[in-house]
Amino acid sequence: MTSTSDNALTNLAKEYREALRLGVYMFRRLDPEGELTAAQLSLLSMIQDAGLRVGDIAKNLGIKVPSATEQIIKLERAGLVTRQPDPDDSRAVQVAITRAGTAAVESADQRRNAMVAELLQGLSSQEIEQLAVALPVIAKLNSSFQN
Image 1 (cartoon, rainbow, N blue to C red):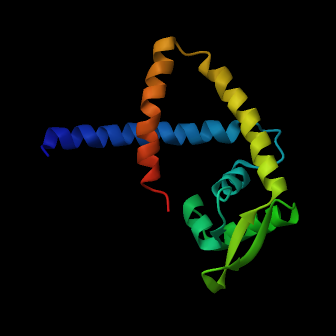
Image 2: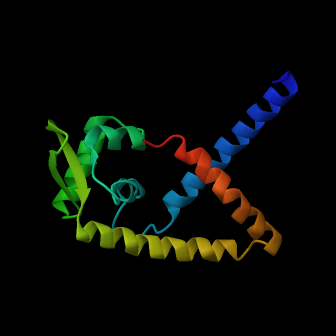
């Protein structure tokens, strides 16, 4: 690559990171009256399809294992997750979502999707189309960081 294209990609990376950072702030402010924090909802959403080890949860959330364990204990006390032996490693524990946890995520998703849909109404048709076209690319970039 040339220096010009390197600079262009670096600038694009900077803009992408900034957009994601501001997006995270926006989503943390959504639904402030909800029963669960944004971090708790992130954790529940992360384990919705399959259980994960505590270390993997911590890694995905960008926090230390003791902090993840603290969140898991709170969610377990609320009946939203269970901890069970990892079938692949008897020394490890997997965290799985309960029916109540799934219901909580679905309820929060519905409220938050309605709020974002309301924000999207402020965009032009062209901007909505541009966003729709960009989403698969964003998803591809994001998936490269997942376990």
